[in-house]
Image (tube, rainbow, N blue to C red; front, side, top):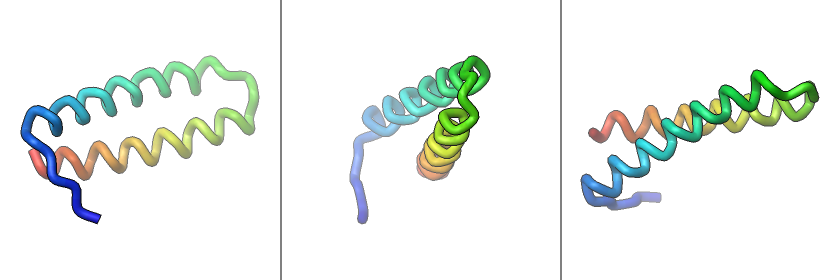
Amino acid sequence: MKLEMTDEELELLRELLSFTLSELRMEIADTDSASYREKLKERKALLAGLLEKLEKDL
């Protein structure tokens, strides 16, 4: 799938992903449930991969 975005849209998406990653890091550190922590880590890895792809386009 190919997605076309303006430079402004791309920058906003990058900022949102960065913010969400930061929030996830705090949530991972604060959670007591091992299974929930693992799900959060998986989500964090997915978001980090997306952000990496976007940063290649900037």
